[in-house]
Image 1: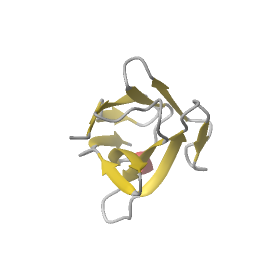
Image 2 (image 1 turned 60 degrees about the vertical axis):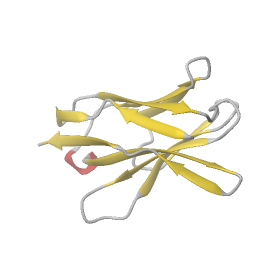
Image 3 (image 1 turned 90 degrees about the horizontal axis):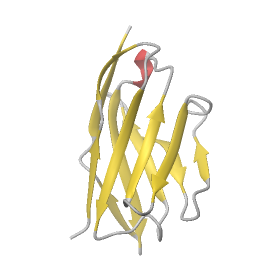
Image 4 (image 1 turned 45 degrees about the vertical axis):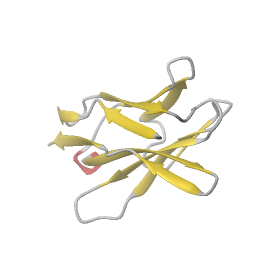
Length: 115
């Protein structure tokens, strides 16, 4: 059964950094595009970053220059390095893959940025 498990969230002060991880089972990052999403309280889920099969990345505007997405195909793990965090970055961060029109989501990891 496909499983995506996020980790690395926590409480950090504004200006701080966190690195999130997403480990996949029964689905391969080397064969699929993966996405990081986030959802702030009361808001819709929004795209943060994308890592394509070949490793090429793209970012939403708010993440550009502060966040770096990457993956290690040997470990079947994806990462989201977040720097210069702001209170507006607070939310649950999710790992996502769509394969054959099926969406797979992790349960998320909570990031809280204090002012």
